[in-house]
Image (cartoon, rainbow, N blue to C red; front, side):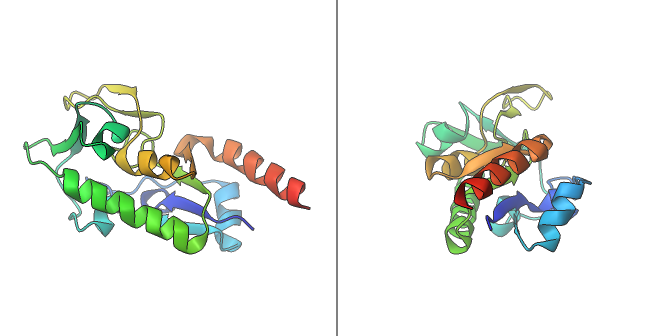
Length: 166
């Protein structure tokens, strides 16, 4: 049975920058939780950042650019938190390796967890195409990342894989 790395805030844990959660109420998630498939992560908290904390956005590109040293993660106060975001991403990858995780369901638009969209780095509420630091690192290492609003799509991929192995 495939394990799924999931953003802790999606499970109701108040770990987001604003001290809140972003719980997703889904029969699919409830089933996966009962089956013991979910491995919760908040890369930012695991890297030692406080909750609540200043909002952060990627400046100079997306998560891949951060991984390659060409962009940085900065708080709204101008503090460079790139090293914490990189550390959190590595810890998330370590969790995937420890639990043989090949799929992740992460919070869209987050500078860590966004997989299709992130904020544009100007703290103006605008989103652009791109991945967060953790999503980019996981994808670089073969973990397939889904945004939180694609639970059903992930369920279909898992079911197809299970049918193929049966």
